[in-house]
Image 1 (cartoon, rainbow, N blue to C red):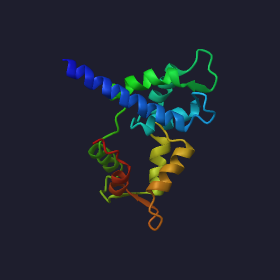
Image 2 (cartoon, rainbow, N blue to C red):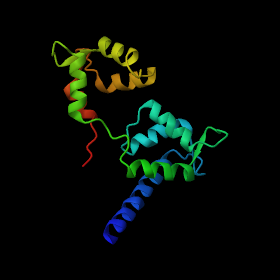
Image 3 (tube, rainbow, N blue to C red):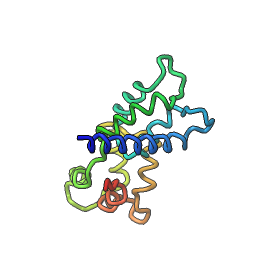
Image 4 (cartoon, rainbow, N blue to C red):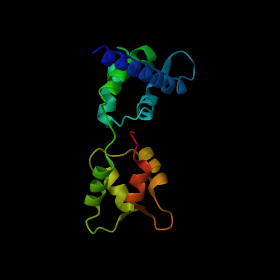
Amino acid sequence: MADDKEREDITVAEFHKKIKDAFEVFDHEANNTVDVREIGTIIRSLGCCPSEGELHDLIAEVEEEEPTGYIRFEKFLPVMTEVLLERRYRPIPEDILLRAFEVLDPSKRGFLLKEELIKYMTEEGEPFSQEEMEEMLSAAIDPESNSVHYKDYIAMMVIDES
């Protein structure tokens, strides 16, 4: 039993270091605060993939009662440690992403045209912002065919959790 507690302490210490390192990248004033708009980037850099709604809830949890536009490290650390310990917001597995793309490609071509992708990603489900769409297109589109070969895109985007 003591071994389990010791292992958890090591894990917590490792998580604290990872969280601190990620936070410090965006702490431009070196005052243990970051712009609230950077929280999603920090969380994703730690291997978590929350939806926009989940991200909004997390931000509400770490914001000051009177929001200042900045998040303090001492409020962020315990919440993010809990998220990592509970393995919340895990990335979607490759096979599920593939099935999702295949649903959008009923003729089984293995690709989606740029226009199709834009339509699906901005008009269906939780829509992408213009910035998110541009970022995805820059990584996903084959400029020669103006399409996304989704198996290649998925392989490039999947986070290896090992």
